Image (cartoon, rainbow, N blue to C red; front, side):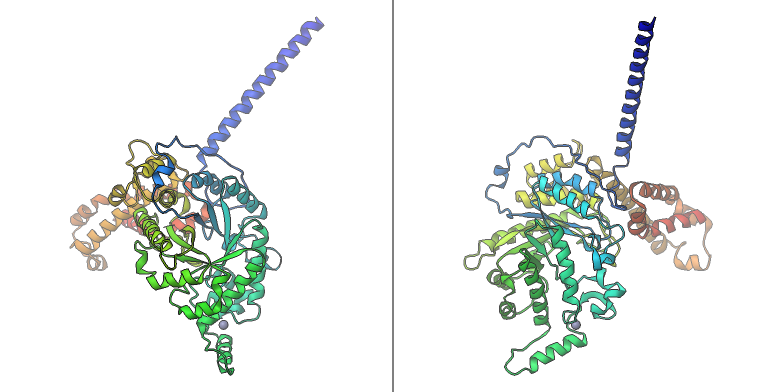
Length: 546
Ligand SMILES: [Zn+2]
C-alpha cells in the first residue's frame, strides 16, 4: 500500500510539474506577445535599460557588393549621426537598429547627446531628468562594437550651447545676455566649463579615437564688452597683426581642439564658420594641424554652397576632411516625414563632389568619410521635426546609396529586403522616388517603426484633406467666407452641402488621437503630435458645431 501511495504521490508531483510548466510557457508566450504589441516604445522616457538584440536577418543578396561598387567612389567611412536632442531613442530600440545600419554600410556612429549625457559632479544639473546612465552608454558602446561600428561623441563647445546657457548658473557665460546660443570665448570660466564637459564625455568614451567639438552656427560672436576690449587691446599693441572676431573664433576653437588633442583624441569641427574666412587667417591660426573638418551641406547641388576655392583652402590647410549629408531634419523645421528623394539627391551630389575633389590633380581633398546627419530639431528650443523610427527607411536608403555608390537595381533590392517589404511594394528606385518622394506605401513593409510611420501617414492624409477643405471653404466658397462667418449670414442649405465631405472628420481625428497615444509615449504626444494637430481638431470641432 505504501508503494502504491508513493507512486501516486510521484504521479501527482509529475502532474503538478507538467501543469506549472504549461502555465510558465503560457505566461512567456503572453509576455512575448505583449512585448510585440508594445514594441513601438521607441523613445526613452525612463531609466530602464534593455538588452535586446532581436533582429531578423535578410535573405541572401543577388549581386555581390564588389560588382555593385565596381568603378564607383565610395566614402572610406560612412557615419550615422544619432541626434538625441528632444526625442531620445530608447536604447533597446537604438541597439536593435545597429545590425541593420551595419548591414546597410555604416562604419561609425556620431552620437550627439546634448543634455542626455549623464554629467556628474559640478555638472550634474545640466543633464536632462531622463538622461542616459553611464551603464546605458557602456551597453550602447558595447553593442556598437559588436556590430563593427566605432563611436564618435559630439559635444557643442561654441554655438548651440542653449542646453547649458539657458541655466541660471551659466547665464554669465553667454556672449549676449538675452541669447543663450553662444558662449563667450573671452569670459573667465568658459574654458573651465568646456574642459569639464569634454573631460567627462571623453572619460566615458575612452575607446573613441575622435571627438566632434561642434562649433557651427556661432550666431553671437565678439559683441560683448569683454570680447570688444580683447580685440581692441590686441590691435593697439605695437607690432601686432590686425585682430578681429574671426580670429577670436579661431583662437577659441584652437584652445578647445588643443585640449582634446592633448587627451589623445582627434577633434572634428563643423566647417560653416570657416567657409567665408580668408585663407590666410585660417592658415596663420594653424588650426588645420590639430582639427579635422566636417563640411556640411544638405542640398542637391553641393557646388552651389561649397565652391572651388573653398575646397582648395580645405585641402591645403586641413589634415583630414569629412563630408556631412542628411537623411532627416534638413528639409523643414516642422517636417513630419523625410523627403527621401531630396536626401538621395543630396547623397548623390556628395558622392560626385567627393570623387571629383579627392582626385584633384594639385590639391586632392583627403576625405575621411561621409556622415549622414539626422536632426531631431533645429535647435534646443525648436519643436521636433521627423522622428527616428518613422525615418528609418530614409536612413537605410541613403546609407545604402552612400555605401554602394548609387541607387541601381541591386541596391534597391537590398533596401527592399532590409526594410522587410512585400512583393506588392514597388522597389525604391529614383523613378519610384520621383513619383512618391515620401514613399507612403512603406506601410506595406515590416521594419521596426512601421506603426509610427502609419500614424504619420494617417496624420498626413487628414492634414491634406483639411487643408484642401479649408482652402475650398474659406477661400473659394461664397457662403462660408470669413465675412459670412463673422456676420452669421449664409444659406444653411449651401453650408450643409459644402461641409458634406467633412462628415467623417470628427471620428477620424478622434481615432488619430487614440492611435498617437498608443504609438507614442506621453511626452512625445505632447511634443510632437499636439502642436501639429490643432488645425485637425479645430476643423473637426467646427464640423461638429454646424
Ligand atoms: Zn564675449
